[in-house]
Image (cartoon, rainbow, N blue to C red):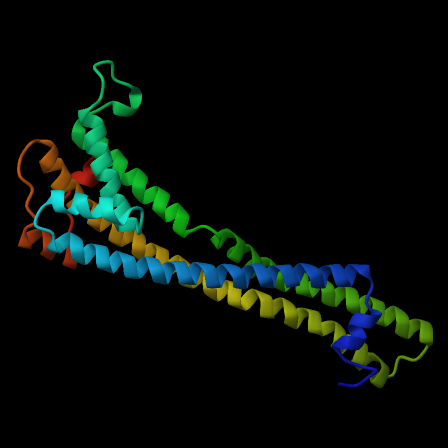
Length: 252
């Protein structure tokens, strides 16, 4: 790199505003990559736990076996959390006092439906944590970099005007240095935009799978709440595999 031109020279000649803009973009980049690695690692781990739980769920001989497995495993992936909240809702509705509270209002099916929907909403909210920051970085980083470029070009032109020499060799270097800010803004924004779209698509798929699974959980727990046996049938397994849904939960 030349000792007279380049990013190092631009940084040495920059004022407080330009350095502040650089610091903002650095924080944006660090925050984006931190979220990308953290959310990626969590999504990978949650996906593995979900596959193990769903395999164990459909292979379980009864709901009591599933309940025992949940006690052993503790809090885990969104699918096991959904089933756990369903068990809690059924027990809570059975033990409600004679003087009902608003939270206990409705039939057992309505109470269970609210619990399952609430569980899905809470897990989806956890999955979407941090995406607002990624979207903000993706949409604003190019403009922050452009602001730095405009500010750098302004100072470069002021310096050239004061020197009285406006030749191309004198203008190209400082203006080119200032354009580095735009490049940095794009370098910060592009990974954030790609990560946001990836996680948004992944979360939509998880939510769709959770809603599909919730219909089977509702059918099993709703039947059990009425005091009837609730075996895990081949038809239920096929419905979970194909994504077919009964209409009960959506109509509640």
